[in-house]
Length: 169
Image (cartoon, rainbow, N blue to C red; front, side, top):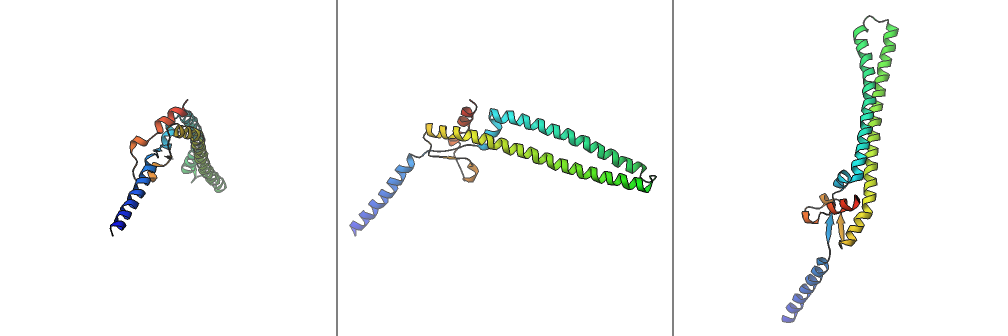
């Protein structure tokens, strides 16, 4: 009986001893991808370009919306006194202008979203090499890119600042 207890105790010690020894050498870190995109130099420069594109699209949409509003105002003001054929023509123009505005708005949103996704992909591609370099240099076994997938991570394992520093070189 004592041999079984001693054997079980040794087995438990061996399992826990070996497993804790292997885990103690593992280093875990994580990076905040949103911060990489927002705070990196290339991310900031690309955000300026995207903001310029957004402003250009807004100006184009504003001009088209003004045309639509002018046509609608004309119909509201003079629609009752217009010749029925002319009124029908103006209503068709108004409908076309409305559909064009909706299409332009959807296209602008899609184009801006595509640029944004492209920016994120480009930065993450560049950051991947830096991330691997930082991981090797600091002997990290695991680096998480989505710390939200884990219940809790100690802030001390956040290596975003180090990766940003290297990425901005």
